[in-house]
Length: 56
Image (cartoon, rainbow, N blue to C red; front, side, top):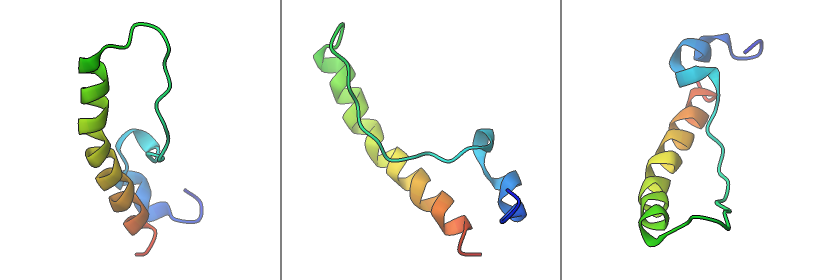
């Protein structure tokens, strides 16, 4: 935040979403996997919006 103080108020929870991966070996069923895949697009959009804040 020292380098980009204007973004502090724009970030939810004061952190960036990061692209990552899903790993789990116990208790995962088809619905959990489907939900994870559905929400990836939302996380990618949040990531892109947050990165755009650094361009201001």
